[in-house]
Length: 87
Image (cartoon, rainbow, N blue to C red):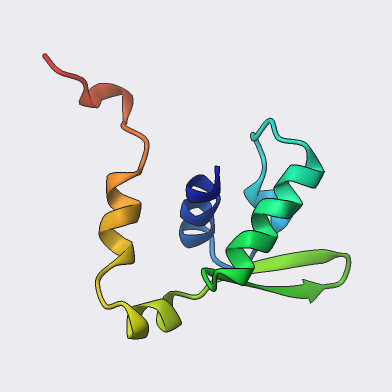
């Protein structure tokens, strides 16, 4: 679940928590806990924008600290496209 949330944040920087959670069948309390853990781990930052929280991936910080690490992880864990099956 957290990897999916990180992938969504990287694909849609500056999105709100609710926009990134669209389509997930997870209770709000569980989702809030996942956001907290990702924030405390340093993968995302959160800012208040009116009534919403904006999620920003910390790509620059992570890239400086661990060069080239996050891209392969996000690429390998991406869901497969429907037409990528074996023939």
